[in-house]
Image (cartoon, rainbow, N blue to C red):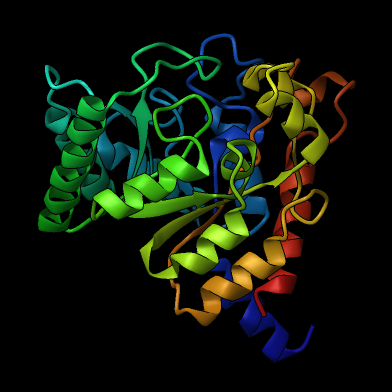
Length: 303
């Protein structure tokens, strides 16, 4: 490998992070077999990833300094993480949860708060309908959180996510028009929510502050959209794919962002469910094989 190729690979890797859910680690109850942090971090490190999102509570060490030390032992650092928080209920103040999360980010060297507009019920297979009052409350809370994050030196962004109060392209556009919050583009969740993630990114590149990359089997996604499969069933059926193997034009999206001056993280986040540990002899190499495919694809298109 030439010096220039090695330099490109290292520079690109410096902005590519892992996500525990690519190894099947998730906060949703009964979300398949959960791998231990040691195995996941070893495999992330073996790929040369620079950092990881936190994953669910309990996956990494709880105390922030211990968390940073744990990651450092594998040559990695923290990006930040996913925070499902109730935003649309006027009786609930989300700020104490957000401040506690920011405390953990600052103490562990992380800088991104990825907000999901929690519905108030577990899982992502159903959600209530939000009225205008609920929208007003949610948009105001997103602005409050954006300002607080800026004051404290981190970035807040909203993550359109199936089964949350911000799911579809229309809902995402309403958030962008009605608040100042940054956008976490998740290529998979936006497509499953009926949006075109590439077109949305091209229309609002200045709002994108964080990126979750996954590819999608469009035929399975269509069954989620028409109600014949729940989100969880679709994930178990393999709806999310390694980059370059599905129906999202990942290359076009990355090139659009890079041309617009995006310098944030690209998080490899292919949601999977595991039936058993990969070491049981039935699962082959396990999730790391798909993450490797995605990483290799991203390094090719990010030149």
